[in-house]
Image (cartoon, rainbow, N blue to C red; front, side, top):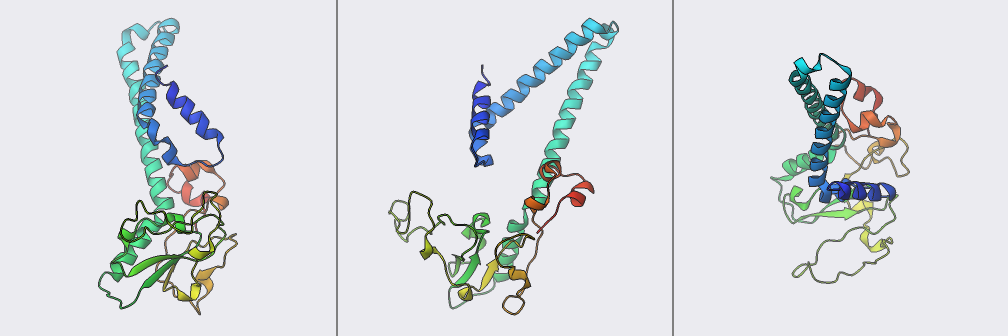
Length: 241
């Protein structure tokens, strides 16, 4: 009964087409509680089965129970480390790239607005804290995404002022875009089957100054190797942009 909230929440969000991990944060305490309850009942079931079918269990019950608990805990730790390493290896490229950009521009003091442009990678921009100062501005170029892009807060009372160029239907707003010729920097993920231009190959217009690997989900069909990191095997079965 106490864990029912977690299962209801999990089933509900598993049924909707758009899933994000942030939807689950409200039940994180219940996730821990449910895991503890499951571990308790698993140990009790193990004790019951061993006492019923194994006559030698009474002499070594405590040892066997401790071994089971240690196996479960060690497996949990290994899976957690594997998941953490997998997320870092597969998806940390934007943070490394913007960190390098910040460090490379820290000593610069431009006399004009520097436009850092993004297309389909707009949702992976971490924060304006990765820009050295207010002279650097995030701008959008048109890509395969056709929804409503974000807009900077208005100067002054930006958190409560009703912004212009918004809608409640997530419809594309053309005023968000800038011409690519006005961009000083461009951050993009180059994938094998993308519909957008392969800017990395346009050496006449762009110069490559930073490059990190990012998981190409559509070309990496084995979900186990995408979700967790396995030495040698992950690099063998995963493909990166």
